[in-house]
Image (cartoon, rainbow, N blue to C red; front, top):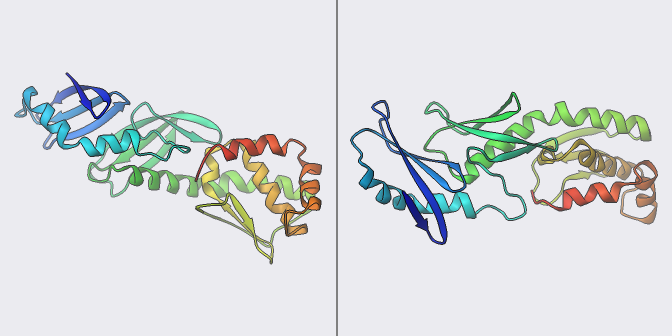
Length: 230
């Protein structure tokens, strides 16, 4: 069955099973809506079911920040360390919040039907990035601290709204763990940037000369970071 929601066309696929206790919707891809129902629900009821969930479907497809679109649908792509991994959604009523597991080059997301809004999935992905930050980014600091002989007092990881990194006046460095969507080369650009602030506290000519001394292609690497929001 075909259905239009605003200006978007979808194919609606009905999957009924005696083990299903309640109605649920899944977006297998950007133009297919899977409606899972108990056996008692008939095909002629599907249109009303989909229309009842119209706003949720539109939010998932369209209401995603334009410059940082994560496809939280089956078959979508989720970035990690510069590689886009295929996403598989797995319903699990025991889950309180969506949980991301990267295994065999696939992002498996275990989620509760009650927690399926875009922000819920984004929060789950953020937790995955935060968990992986020390493992993936600390070795990059080891590399560039050795290269520059610049050492921070402390390295921390948190989610920030406007910055990929910062360096305090006492040389504590904070890194936005959402950087893990990018390649190691792009992350290194931020790592080096903040390390150079240990020696040069502002963005003076001396600062940029120091950055370019160690990373002549830093401008090219920065372009990748500017293509996305947080």
